[in-house]
Image (cartoon, rainbow, N blue to C red; front, side):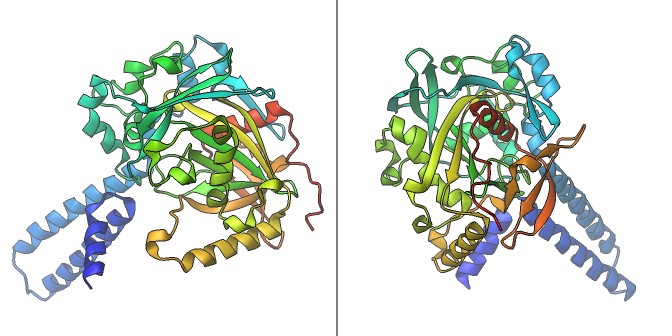
Length: 421
């Protein structure tokens, strides 16, 4: 009973949409009960004051729910035309992605298209990112931008710089809260028309990584293909910190620490092998929901496509990959996925993995098409019995960058090599 009460209290202490829905339902129930009493002449004029208070609360929570729905748009500007006007110093920021005869324009600063280069990593784990004075003075207000999002703080891996001549990545550390109040709230209005973007990233060019005032932890995006050519496409939940209810890359995570350092990340040193391959193997099972025994690393083809800066998130660095699971088709994947969830049910609550996705699609890559004059993409998805469903969904902007890098690579992971039937 005590544990249940603690869970209930914790539920109502946090700011999230489900809590507001429950509270609104409670307000309606109480108002209904009071109306019932009023018809019985049980209450006096106090009833009017109580109803007024409850109605005010109802309006307040209603605004919070509406605000939660539009939260992403309040903290990051997704208007491509507006951003391209701000960053008009480099015409190469304007990218066009073509899918199935349809096109979409988006903003992206690519820093490297990989052509089988050899890379070096210089990691400085003792070096930590320090917020500038302006950001610190507005910390509370910037953090409030995420009132309807899941939040947890931990150490992150920052990209300080990249040397294009020696192909060397320079790394340091930051934390997730720093990310939330910089990259993830870059367009949140603090007062008048002032945001972090027009203080630190006002154009006409993005600041180079070495001069950025953003937390800039490394984002990892990978397209994961099955051996029948289908692409795994997850769709975010409504409480993800960004891209709520939108589709993303199969793997869309931050660069996390190697498993052997998960309990002591401060001791970790990132190697080129881990940055450009092993981190994908580490995140693959968790992101596409497979048990570790289901993955044979010898059957996984991992290609580093390149990296760049996400203009929408204030120049956040994103690394892009394409992955193919050579020994698994669509039907086998769905079967293994169900086995994963069954095994999760048997684990203690403390060991269960949190999921930011509400669903996973197995998509025909060649069926992707943009909706004209809309920020939606359509595609054909298949279930375990190969039944086809036509899906329409919003998309994370970094997903377009991943598809753009995949097209630039000339890889053919989406071609069918085995009969899906």
